[in-house]
Image 1: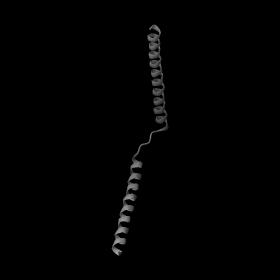
Image 2: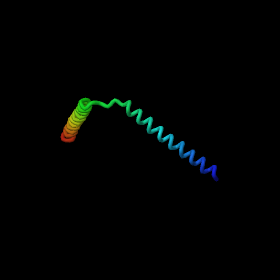
Image 3: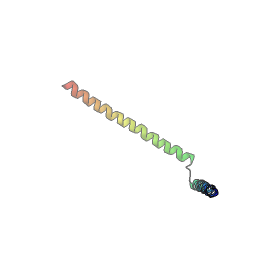
Image 4: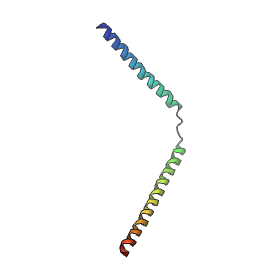
Amino acid sequence: MAKNTTSEKKSEKKEGGKIRKWFKDLKVEFKKVVWPTKKTVINNTSVVLGVIVGSAILVGLIDQGFLGLLRLIYNAG
């Protein structure tokens, strides 16, 4: 019975060591990250929003075009 508790404690220590090592490695990796500047974030966000607005306008125009085409087809028949 003493062997089981000793091996259980060793197992817990190994688990704790693995978790501790994982967090240490995580901290090292976060130090390697190059975070973008505020200007870069604003610029990229502006580009994304511009593309979204442009895409929405394009889809809206295509939708209106198809709607007009369908109205011509059904009103002619």
